[in-house]
Length: 162
Image (cartoon, rainbow, N blue to C red; front, side):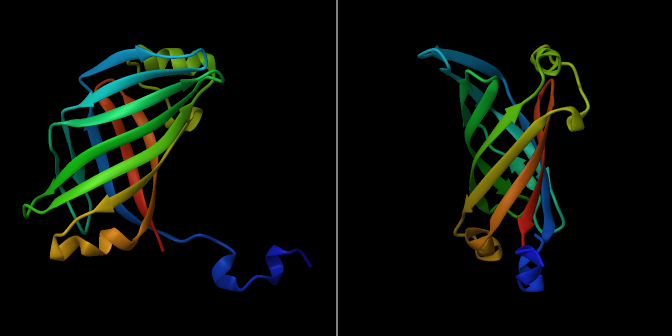
């Protein structure tokens, strides 16, 4: 018997529920630089949209994505955006994550070419803060997202972990 077999059934797998699909526009990258293996760049996130069964709306202008370019060709993400739901609630969304790809795939992404999302790793862990009564449950969930980089910006499938 393995260790996992000894766990209660509820602890053997992770269940998720779709939260929304988020498309974020990126209008430019500012190259701040830094020490070798930890260069920084900052992306402006002027807008976007999100759509799901329980909440939908737009990404308000003013978001940023602070990226660290590691020496192993991994990009670390640290983004902050403001969501406005279709019924005018405001939700602050912060996410960290990482993207890495084989060099030939990374080159194509950097050129704005669409590549198969299964050919690279792109994951985020968002958190939320809101006072909107209809959405206050977001303050108490853990979420994960799977990303896909398009020319205009990333698209994330975001899931609540149950």
